[in-house]
Length: 108
Figure 1 (cartoon, rainbow, N blue to C red):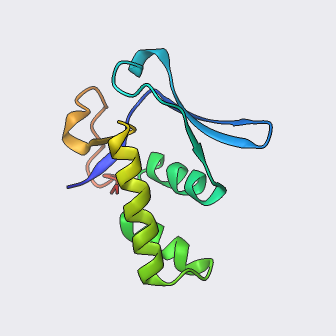
Figure 2 (cartoon, rainbow, N blue to C red):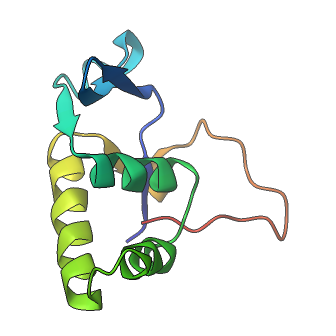
C-alpha cells in the first residue's frame, strides 16, 4: 500500500532540533511532536514531495548506505510515522487535488 504525508504537518528547526509538528487542523489525528535526525528529515521532505520508495532507497545508496540498511531504515521510519498518524494511505486523502494525467507522483 502506498502512503503519503498527512496534510497539516510541518517540519521545523528549533535551535538544533528538527521537529515534525502537527498543526491544529490535524491535532486530533496525530498529537505528538517527533524529533527527527537529519537523514529522517531529508526522507520526510522526499515523502512530502511525492518521491517513490525507490527514489528514497537510491538516496540512501548515494550516501553509502547499503540497500539492505536503506530498506531497514526506511521501513522503521515509515512504521514510526504510521504509528503516530503522520502518514496516511494514499486513498484516504480525498481532499487533495487530483494529479493531471501523466504527472502522478509515487509515494512511500
